[in-house]
Image (cartoon, rainbow, N blue to C red; front, side):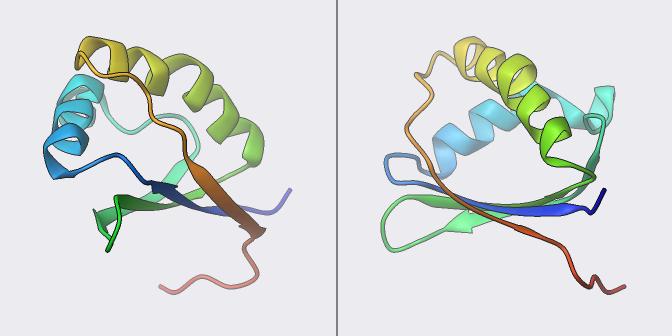
Length: 94
């Protein structure tokens, strides 16, 4: 199974909400979720972008279904709609 890259755009999210959700996820203490290879995030003209590489789509789907939705709840925020572009990773460096 090939790794998958997911480019997510949250039109109604900002840095404050993102930071609250990341605090609720607590990756610094609990470690990254199973299958996460890399994670980057930042502002866009409209909203917030996240670009992740996961070992598989199934790993991301499990994270979305379990951890991410709960983190939004703990952060006191409703999970916003997101636009997703996904593709199989052909090459990754380093």
